[in-house]
Amino acid sequence: MASTTPQYVTQESDGAQSSLQEMAKRHLWMHFTRMSAYDDAEVPIITHGEGCYVFDEHGKRYFDGLSALFCVNAGHGRAEIADAMAEQAKDLGFFTNWSYAHPKAIELAARIAGLAPGDLNRVFFTSGGSEAVEAALKLCRSYHHKRGEAGRYKLIAREIAYHGTTMGALSATGIPDLRTPFEPLMPGGHHVANTNSYHWPEDRDPLWAADAIEEKILFEGPETVSCVILEPVQNAGGCFTPQEGYWQRVREICDKYGVLLISDEVICSWGRLGHYFGAQRYDYQPDIITTAKGLTSAYSPMGAVIVSDKVAEPFMEGTNLFMHGITFGGHPVSAAAAMANLDIFEREDLPGNVLEHEAEFRGLLDGLRDLPIVGDVRGAGYFHAIELVKDQDTKESFDDDESEWLLRGFLSGALYENGLICRADDRGDPVIQLSPPLIAKSEELHEIEGILRTVLTEASKQMAAR
Ligand SMILES: Cc1ncc(COP(=O)(O)O)c(C=O)c1O
Image 1 (cartoon, rainbow, N blue to C red):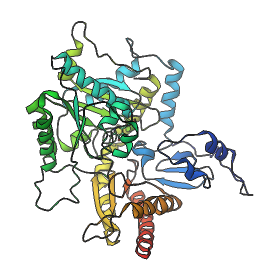
Image 2: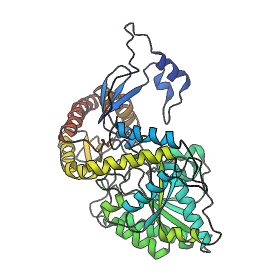
Image 3: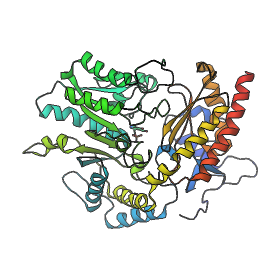
Image 4: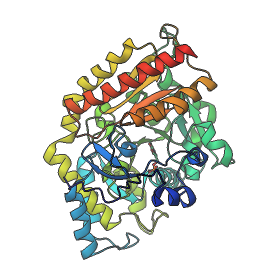
């Protein structure tokens, strides 16, 4: 681990704002952020990290219960990844993958192909997750086009799912608030029910959500449908796991109608669910995997589209090509970061650590059900959510005002003040999401539970008093 000398610690004894605070408020446009929230409050400025922890500009330590944004899988402060990046930058800071190759992209592509399930042997690099999804959607359309089925342009995704924010990826994203301001989107995005069974009637067929995909394909006309894009465990809405047999049924449906299956593993790959890929956890074979984040443990931006031989084949013949590219796809410094990251994964068996501790993690979170505000606990591996409810027995959720107060008025601030970074979110029903670095063991998992218990106990009390 790197030394943690805080280079940016500011210690204004008179309470004056640090110059970083002033510059952040004046110039930095933070993503998905209500900037006015910081008019009278400090911007949280994180300066350095070590292992499962990060530190702010005042030197205060936080448990990074979200791996930054579901991505610093190997933990913070890994000097060997930084060193690998520096070495690569000295040799070849950048060269393109447009008609050229370089050793690190080649080695990484081969390594990914070796780890990916089945015949997913061809790797197209991007700079991040949205670009990977964007490329995968274009690849599917282009695949059908090359096979004489140009009418297949529609995609089927799930309600409340997040697949990114670029215009193509956004048409797969199923969160109305994210879509509406930018409509019209890329045409052809259609949505079906997700696998969140917490509010389902008890007698519902467990494969109801899988069958909804077939119904949608039939409704739209199979000859118009290009692909189905789903996450192994859906992030937005709070870690919706698949029902037993869900993925096998989806695979069957896709095969029946000639539709390609994309497993969007921007979060769910690289050990998050205890396996290199989410598809391995649930034992299915996608045509394409999209990934990013944990591939480099986010030490450098990188995404990838991992493609089966079947889908790649039409692009490998004669004068054919995939008419798509981005400057930084396969960036050598990012590829070097990914190689060093995967060395750590293998040496420390990070997926194995997740499998070893996930039951304990789940048990600790399940233990919070004694708090009246805790409704559901769900997820897999080191990727879990707690759904917050008004009434445990009826599963009644909070209304918009209550949810706004609970999540933004209380929980986000209280969790942070108590030293836990995690996500309090209401893109579906209100949830707290946890996605710790894959190096976390018993002690760290107990620390998460301890802070959650303190804060959720207070939230229950305050909610009851409102
Ligand atoms: C499943 C999924 N797909 C795509 C994306 C978009 O990735 P990025 O933010 O790197 O563009 C995300 C981001 O969280 C994601 O979770």
